[in-house]
Image (cartoon, rainbow, N blue to C red; front, side, top):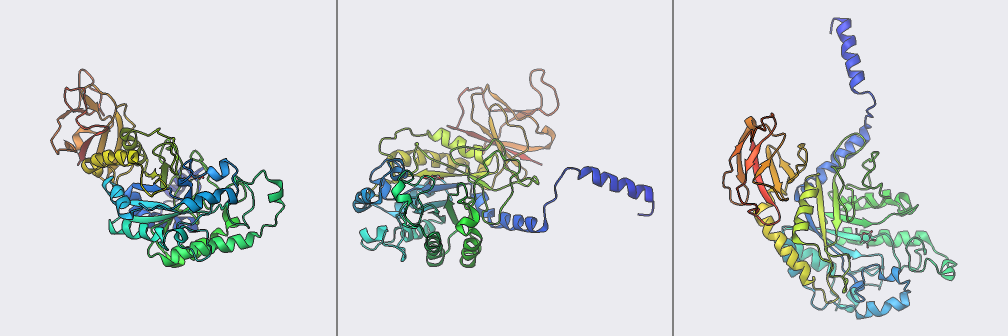
Length: 455
Ligand code: GLC
């Protein structure tokens, strides 16, 4: 550039544009790129099954029963002795997940109660002892892989059973002064925990996801030996995806969010963020809401407060419309059976997914404003209008330029829908009125998807 004045103007413009904007470091950007690369299949999959299964299915008051009732290892033992999921059939579980349209599943290998669902060589506190030597985790992995689903394991960092895990946080003996006087050898616990994770990532074939749970107070990050743990995991499973709970969660509204090297996705629980999650440099962040079908994760006998298939479908679309995933939970009973109520909901969801999955898989946020009648998802040049709420015959897809529309169809049938740019004196530019019929009923239960192909 020869003219110094032009050069100066260009520099000033550049300085102005980047004012107040923080620039990520090279390391940050390269970690970000790797995370986006390895989470790509997962961000396209969008819908997974969470399975909370353990000895807590026997008391049937949820997986926190030991903590909630301040039970000791001795009083809890009767559940462990009783636990024998004789009707467990991994193939049946896998079929249920598959027919719901789920693409991956995550099973609790060890929950906070410390009881292992896998045949760990590092403890006798495990199901295989009671279960004719069967390794339930291995059976789960084999069956789900066979159905073409990706597989993950949940592993609790917290352990309410191990003698070297102190009575901190929500430990069942948190108020027991005598218990607190014992000596806890933290390094010993870490060795055990790292050792078990190594067993899982080394001996069970390709794992797609490792779901750690959870950090609190200063029990976070390096307290768990996170850097070492993650590098060990990546040695055996270079492509594995990790949730973000090896460090304390910064919540879903933080504006200062950053991607860490010890966690690939955010894990909001029982709630959906208001908008796509972004880091402080405005990059979209991978996230997954985990959600129960009734009120509990582990099997809860008295909880009949089931969510409707409609709410589940609309929740899934809500997540996708903000670039997120949904990990939907089932809590099998102590015999190993997924409650019929859950199966029935999943069958309904599956029927909708069979017709409309195209508007979920591989889709993400569109930059159109959320309409009154529902939500949008988008994949490339195709926008999916999800009509969920009562509406009077015309859907206004505001913000879409009618001149750029190639065609509009009803997704479930491929039938063409007509549209116009103005309606009843509403001639402002930027309106697109799609005629969805004179009937006040939606043609598809729960969510009618209108596919808008743009040029
Ligand atoms: C929580 C709970 C736990 C459940 C998990 C699922 O952290 O402690 O019981 O497994 O969330 O996200």
